[in-house]
Image (cartoon, rainbow, N blue to C red; front, side):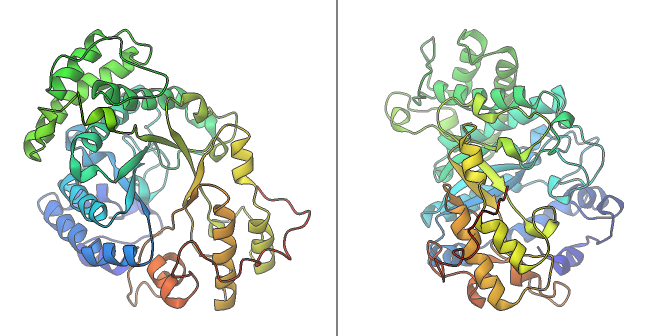
Length: 430
């Protein structure tokens, strides 16, 4: 997103991202005394009120915020894990700005404890040593989930958040993600357990006890210790109890008084439960668990589609448009209970040199395809403009895509609603 900015901060670029300062983990390890200050400046200047104003002016109604587990600093093992501190305050700042602009937010657990996908900078640590799919790191992710769910319902600055995504882009081969289906079920149960403790109605389930205190951490401790409801299995109870001291610490640090005194009788009974969110079942192969089987209350599904990484269509305009215009992912997912579906990541990059005329068609065709589901979120809102970045923003920046005319100023519109007419035939796409 910002190659020159990363170098200016003190980062590095290399062909193998595990061999240089190419991630937050490597950066914090290399600069332990200054990493917090450097990242605070980066966060403060990369996403600003001007960006929020521009998103609003362009009619954007939803953002997906990628988060690392280390935003909950108590979950980090500082002896072996290295990440910048202070992200939670920047998250709250950004959520407040988005809330005031009327823009809804998805909290996306983008980088999981132990790393969920090998060789990817987006996991926060580029490594082949993938350890997320273990009991210990599933547990840490559930503690993170309990904390984020509680903050979402208790801190007014989180009031624009409507969904929490469990795991961004897990390994696509389900044979390499043992017990991931159990984690999905426990993720939903943790979210619902927090909500039930707060008095938020969840369709189909209810507490088997009455909450007697206005102190949320005390209430959560009591419920997790004594409830015999089906959603409170041993792992869920363990995660809830582990989240209590973290929430106490955050309550004092961030001055969130409602953690210690929440109004069970009135406000919470009117609140909606969060949408639990997973990558769709067809993200994985080799007999994956179906996240639809984990649903308790409202749930949504996420799919990401980038033609530029190969494996989707031959690298030419005709093949791209034939593929996208016959896309049936929404229908395939719905047949397996993965509905509503939205496309949480897509962009304009291609594997060939694309003309301006093609990018107009490419933007229209993708928007039409993804709008068959619940909608879409473009990756990313902006990229760096610099000599080193070159033409990066042309196909990766939403702001620049609108400026250049590939993307319509009204996101609900397209230049040509008939762009796919000549490509819809008996072709198939997946």
